[in-house]
Image (tube, rainbow, N blue to C red; front, top):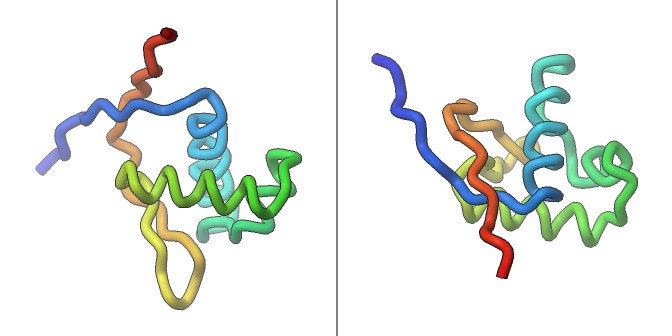
Length: 84
């Protein structure tokens, strides 16, 4: 069974973070920690944690006990926020 493609609205930074997490997961077979995400994007740990919270709220990442993040299947299409 193939999952339906869902549209999720990402900011540019959220999309960049999501793409980083997917690439990291493909290369290392695990999701990055908040610290590793921050280092990879050149942002602070606080900014990284906020991005993780936003992506978790959108349902594209999930927090786990053993490891900070779990990557959900990337069946999402990028849908940018409309500029106001």
